[in-house]
Amino acid sequence: MIGFIGSGQMARALATGFIQQGRLLGAEICFTNPGDTNADAFLQAAPGARRLASAELVVREAAQVWVAVKPQIIRGVLEPLASAFRSEQVLVSVAAGVTLGSLEKWTRHEKIVRVSPSTPAVVGQGISILSHSAAVTEIETDHVRSLLQTVGSAWEVPERLIDPISGLTSCGPAFVMTIIEALSDGAVRAGVPRHLANPLVLELLSGSIALVQKTGLHPAQLREQVASPAGSTIEGLVALEEGGLRAALINAVSSSSRRAGELGKLAMADDPATSQGSGG
Ligand SMILES: NC(=O)c1ccc[n+]([C@@H]2O[C@H](COP(=O)([O-])OP(=O)(O)OC[C@H]3O[C@@H](n4cnc5c(N)ncnc54)[C@H](OP(=O)(O)O)[C@@H]3O)[C@@H](O)[C@H]2O)c1
Image 1: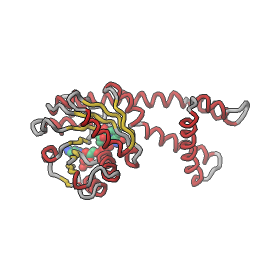
Image 2 (image 1 turned 90 degrees about the horizontal axis):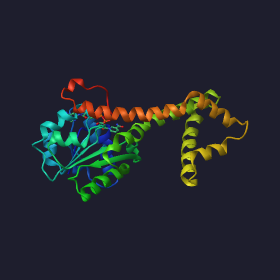
Image 3 (image 1 turned 120 degrees about the vertical axis):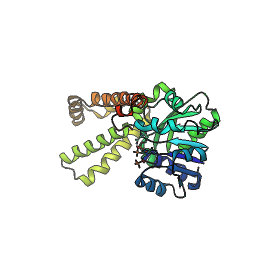
Image 4 (image 1 turned 30 degrees about the vertical axis):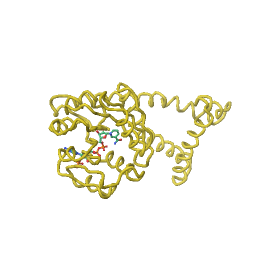
């Protein structure tokens, strides 16, 4: 039995993957969530799952517990559960920025896996970054990794890399959505109807990714191949440089990485009232 504490967007994406990829039956999942809206949506995504009245009941029933609440409240959710965890249980946290050390301290539990997932998990193409405490065995790590692989790829890294990578992989979908939207706007500005612009942008991105992957060439080489002397592409590239696209993207990733670390520190703060922001 896998248990979820919190059944919001990320828990739903994960449970959907576990079930759709045939790793679990709905009946092998239990969860708790205060509000009905997210609980009902979870039940739709994971038919047969059981909603329990408290996080303590989830810890008692589940062999593996996935905590998927916001970083700002995770301490208040986990601390009261400290005496409920059994030593053989694995606790998996998906909370942004919250360290293994904090999780161990709050739960007084040793087997902990920290995961930074991403929303494309909803369509089975997420990226999960994971790290675990020393007490988690290889078999237990493999089990968590294989569950994560039902919603995309899973990469084990040293914990110090989780926040820097999550600024790219967990926050990155929002950056890419902005790029998609802006490219479509550019096409519309040039006179392309929106109904053509939107699918063309998606084809452009997937084709460009395939070109990098299949040729193995550096993106700069591929860019040079398109930019002929005094041609139209070099005009667009100059506009990108003038607009600071490169610096904006570099800053976006590093700002999000830094904020992920801050969220973890806020979660560690003694006074929950000092917490700010929304996380994820
Ligand atoms: N979404 C992302 O792209 C993303 C990426 C990486 C990491 N994460 C991490 O994933 C975690 C969840 O994010 P999310 O996007 O899924 O947020 P979300 O949709 O807001 O889900 C959080 C859930 O926690 C529930 N909850 C609140 N208090 C609770 C309590 N005391 N006990 C049990 N459940 C409680 C909420 O219930 P109610 O709605 O009923 O209040 C809500 O369903 C966060 O820690 C975030 O950092 C998210």
